[in-house]
Image 1 (spheres, protein in one colour):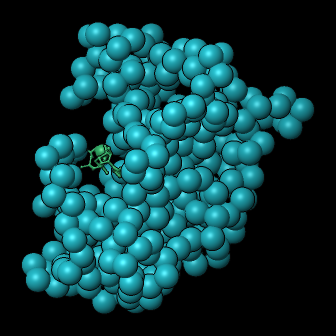
Image 2: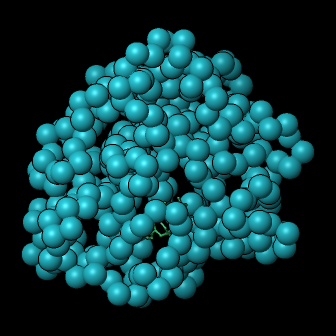
Length: 318
Ligand SMILES: Nc1ncnc2c1ncn2[C@@H]1O[C@H](COP(=O)(O)OP(=O)(O)OP(=O)(O)O)[C@@H](O)[C@H]1O
Ligand SMILES: [Mg+2]
């Protein structure tokens, strides 16, 4: 299932890259970011000449958070789910470090619209700031309608199970209504790649503290993890827990289980190798060995729990 990741030899210095003056005019989201254009002769072949990239910083309290975005991209590749390529970057003039994220649609040919725009049209009381009405039942109604009208060309049930699986594996708590959406072409609509994955992988924990954690501490932390989405407005909030929400989606859409299982079919060694090169990259805020170890420990345990969950039912139930 794996998608070969785009990897880098050195951190990208964007000091001389052209800044997209228009991007700052309509900033969306919580973290400081700029959009920049790659030069015509990029430093490495994984960078697309002239393409727009997001230079997305960490939250102030967590200077190394941007690495979570880069690691999440590598994990997406391991699962074979579409995540915009993310690299480590910095600006040598300002010394600011950030992730550098490939723009996922082509300007002029496609446009992007957040899921929240449509959910708000369905329920005018939808609060875009908190997203407390964000739920999969409403989303399903929208997807079914667009599929019937033959304008949505994505297997949306599989897309959502893949998203929930990916989010549960990285422990992403931030898949709110504006962290997914639709890419529009003149004659069709598809679901976007999974962007904005940096609120994950235990980025908010200090490595000195978590180094002391027992396995029971790890499990307590993992089990508390919640998705932003609920299953429906009338489900108990327990279905927001990563594993519970995925279990619910798999039971409602059993045809998605087989692909989900295949996505989890990688070894501990492959998991470790998926992002072990990143500690070598030389930037002012580096990816420390301790940060890498903690992320790997979390990922290993979540991988184990997800495989158990996916094997809960016999194959004949699919
Ligand atoms: N790779 C990309 N290609 C195109 N547009 C993108 C990409 N990544 C992000 N965007 C756009 O930029 C917006 C802000 O980016 P993003 O969601 O990553 O930032 P954020 O500050 O972390 O947001 P949040 O408040 O959700 O945590 C997105 O809502 C989306 O419209
Ligand atoms: Mg966002």
